[in-house]
Length: 348
Ligand SMILES: [Zn+2]
Image 1 (cartoon, rainbow, N blue to C red):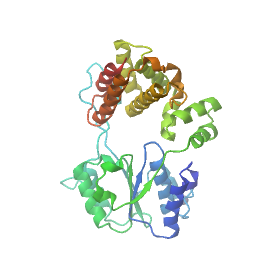
Image 2: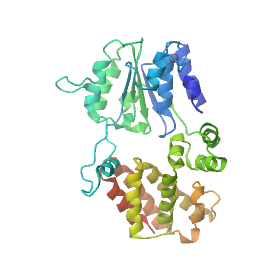
Image 3: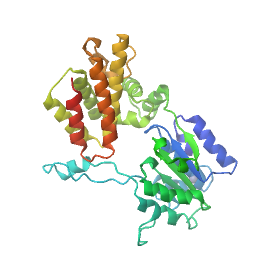
Image 4: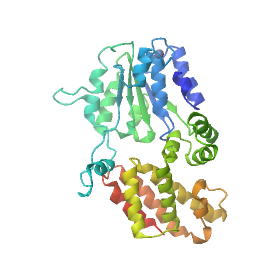
């Protein structure tokens, strides 16, 4: 139960539990590592150990249950606030528009409250005693997406942390968090899970058949979150179609437009497709260099790769384009047009 219910990450779990055993919890943790590998899940399970009525993260006491439901009054959860896309085409239905929602940032008001004191931020909350236990846990997800003024406000609290509070900052881009904040946290870094762990998880925990579990574990890049994404048949199909377009097996403007539409409509997480495209282009590099497809990471699309058809200059251009798009995506709200533009640029 608690941390013991988590797959893998043995060192990190042992480290966290050792803080509890020594009864010396730091006032702030920074959990870093690629997205989808369970950082937030581990933080929440660890918080169970801290707030559990039995002290064990039992999963059955009132405190553990409230944490599981994320309704515990001493657990504050914040993260980037979603912003609706204003410039999506007018002919879209409301539901379609909401699927174009861009990931936004963490505004200052969540940390410092608003000017007239109507909204209480983290900085005000931490001054009061916890409601039910002896400790309050504050979890900031995607902490790298704090706006600068939000980060400045948080720093003030971390500089003189009030007692009874533990902060958990979760990030997949540690370097985007100001050093002044990082240096005040105990860093716990998470590595991608081993392929065998992921395979076992999908087979034993989710009862996925052997062949599928094997495929998912290969394309999940060390992350159960990624694996869950590709487990959805629709996402996996789109992945294949994108690969057909990029490798030149099925080339058309109409196709590019359609795929851009589908990818943004069916999934809130466009970054999964972009990461896939980048890794596919890397695979193409390997194929070009080795004249062999044995070392390809994306084995489900291996049959589409032929080194005779790959042009090195195009490949470099395409990789640059995908990377640029990944950066712009953080700011641009119309992801459909962004992806369409990318696909038309890089299709062969
Ligand atoms: Zn409990």
